[in-house]
Image (cartoon, rainbow, N blue to C red):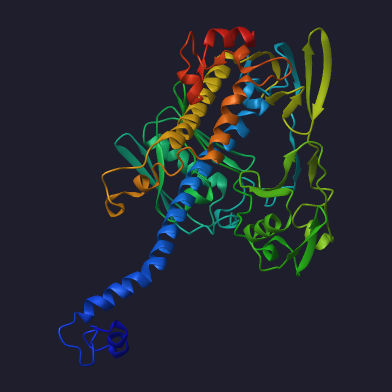
Length: 494
């Protein structure tokens, strides 16, 4: 039969079943098989190309794993080669309450005698007292600097299981209140000495006692609510936690006497103040605007406190019109400024004495860092941490062996046998791809030959690092592995 005539009569088209259909009057010939064979032959180049693609993709993955291993080792060795890693130093202070110390590799071993002569301090600018001077003759109603006193406040004094109540009216003076309290203690069978001085009420009794509000806010007005009862011998004392005449931070600037919106400058930074601002709002504005100063309010003394954020001789300047500075007691007449001090130390080492100063309480002296905390003297001993050096060299040996073992395995391992590629996991597919790879072999040889490199007349063997092979055994040498002789390393360090 003429095959060319058969081929000329074969035609096919796609149907819903996607099967090849043959038209033509060809009887008894398996045209479907012929076509499949022809298509198979046609697809061979594509199959070979796909196989090549898979092969090179897997090879690329294998090289990537090698690259990652070498990169990890490179990062490790970069940090390892730093002087701080190779030559760790210890610094021990004989008086840690005075100072602590640490040493860089450049610090010389030996004993340092340190005298802390002065500590660095912050500069502080304080206003005068914001508030009124409360007198013992002032009425209860007039003590409105922090809270508005409630008329007919009821107060309970309790001693043991007994208690007495007193009522305090707006018209009562502080002297009147003291008399009422005194009588309550007497009625409870206790003796009491109650005084009012420097804006504080002080109650002393021979028995433990409690004072609380039944109604009103007496304990808040006299700042006894947050005061704690203290005992000294047989005397129990309760004293106002602060001056009752100072203003709270909820006071508005207008209530302090600032009649119109204005501005002030602190260290050259301008702060806009509104009469409706509270003291708390003003402090927030200062802290949000001035970067080198921290503003607070001393609730006990009623003073605005500006503190430099860094220690040392820092100037704090406050500028503005008297319309703001005088009511805030930030003017020259009422305010005080204390310049921060420099830290000073005297260091004696190897018979040489030096005096040093610093804006901070941290000194760096020839690789030795001193952190000061109190005045006094301390002896700092600096030495080389030999144990840590040995541990780090041991870690290097382990990292080295991990890498060379990986490289040696890759250039010697065989491909997985007895499994189809579909049955292999990712690692099995990559196994054996780099066997006898010339490029990888050169990398491995460079690592292995590094063991014999001479640097300034020294090799790794002088540090106690070698293959460890003896006699005719060269297994470690072949695999690029190394071992550490700790005794030899310690002698080298010494």
